Length: 473
Image: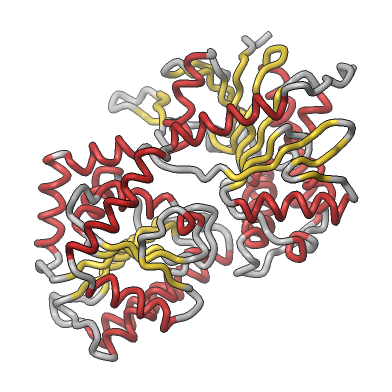
């Protein structure tokens, strides 16, 4: 029998990557994202287990321990990866939850596989969780897990956190197995969202779709209370500040400016290549400002990093073609020999290189059409030290409710985006420094560790006084 843990994280991916050493040996190393940074202390303190997919298809490796965390891999076949992950998760749920920016695709076989894979994750959690353990389920790929897990293990404290937006009732109602998804989430004691409005959408949906009573943010279901709340996720602020201050990163930032021809203004975009991120609209706004003569090539240069993403999903292939066509058009019309207007980089970069780009950039453009949070915006702010810089931020990114001193814009309005960009470029340095300092103060007191602690404390409170249902046989 597997060793049991009092704290279990269930996420689509494990926080590890398989690497091959120079002498051909296969090893695991941690892939430090914000989530693992936040949860690492809690996992090590409680001998915690992380359940997730290890990448690849076929049989999963045996459970193992790495840096004080027990790692419990869950297998996915090639067909399951296609249907549960690329299909139901990323071609159905992702677009629907992002305001249907692209039309969601609904397929019965995708839903069936999503159900099957969620059951596998729930069973893995039921197996490794100790009596009365805390289980924290993460994100849209695993929305059925809480209810499935509660049926298997009614003794557990179950939390769920959705990292992406949660749609309004009229959009959610399109989902063919909408009641099952909602009941899946209601298996939790606490359901966390990035925004207060998302939590309100969820509570109202429970009333509208299942006729459940609620009071404030508490929903009555099966004789127990399910709490909903907003817990805006953040970054490891200290780590980003430390990285940006590193002399190597500072030197690389100067090098980047020199490589770009030491322009007056470097405008930076860093996004996954995703249709929700508004990359194409941002490029068009830049093109129009060049055409209007409001910005000049040589004085201003745009660097757009578009990290490869979900390349087998059709929407993403189409987007790549559109973005690259727009970059070509801008450089064709406004570039000069050796002086492109836009540097487009379709590749992944290390944290150090990204930090150097943040340090080098005068203006950061984060203009998603819809985003749960957007941590890039927070990373840029944390990297700026006392050097000013300007953040142009979409009103529809979760980060907009916290980073009020940014230059907010409606990404659907090209004139609004152009106006925000021009204000960011033209604002006095002293005012930019003042704005940046206010946002930095906020991030120092609202970092990713504080986010995890706040959620887990709220989960303890939500689960208190709950009468455990009889153990299922």
